Amino acid sequence: MVVIEPVPSTDDIEPKPSKSTTARVESSNNNRANADVVDSSSGDKATAAAGYASDGYETASETEVGDDEAVSDKTDARKAVENDEKHKLEEVAVVSKDQTYEDALNEDELKQKILAQMNEAKVEGNKLFGDGLYEEALLKYDYAIQLAPEMSSSAEIRSICHNNRATCFFKLGNYEDTVKECSKALELNPTYMKALIRRGEANEKLTNYDEAITDMKKILELDPSNHQAKRTIIRVEPLAIEKREKLKEEMIGKLKDMGNTILGKFGMSVDNFKAVQDPNTGSYSISFQR
Image (cartoon, rainbow, N blue to C red; front, top):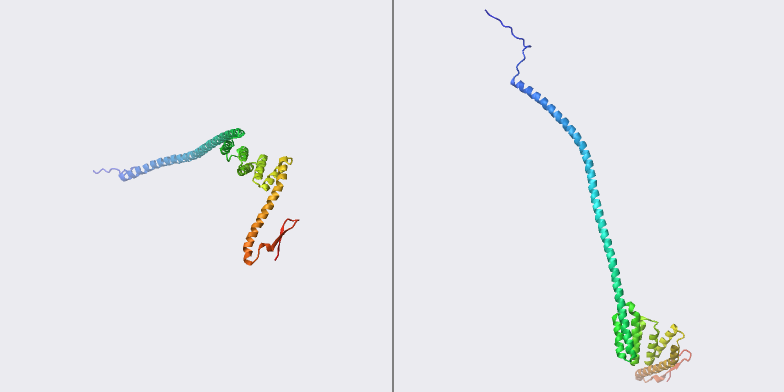
């Protein structure tokens, strides 16, 4: 006897998944899980990115603030250096001024010391002059002059010493050096009366009458009541006129000699020429005579 078993419905039967199917399902599930993970990760990343962006903004802001502070620090440091250099320069300037002041004091002290030495030498020269030791006095006066031959503040003492040397030379009868020393004194002090008088006297001794009169007239300009200058002019003016006439005659004589030498070649002489003086002007006119 044949027993027929009922065939189960395919609907009730759950197909056994194949290995490939199982693998696909697992893969699909894994993909979903991974997708979830990825999404979660992506979400986290997005959130992190958003957070990072936010943090990045804040960080950037902090960075900017940090840079500003760094720049500010650098600026402050530079200003500090500049201020330090400025203070140093100011200190150097103060030191320089102080040094200049000290140098000025030292220079003034040195000048005063030199002037004192010059005056001391002058006084010693005066003592020697008073003792009639003119040569020795000359040396002392010269020593005083050489102590500061170019210092402007010593001009007065140098002028006096030159005039004193002129007086020594006058006493020694050396009138030419007297005139030279007086001229040096007058270069330093053009209104030095004693030097003008001394030079006028020396020029009179040298028969330089016109020069002597010039000095005396200069004295009268400075001191119209100076009787010595007036007397000297009255005494010297006739001598000056006489000397001028004598020099004129000597010059005419020399010209005649020269003329005769030249005119003699032509059978003539200067005697053929006559000089006539105009009494009003003092000039001469020449006329030819045979």
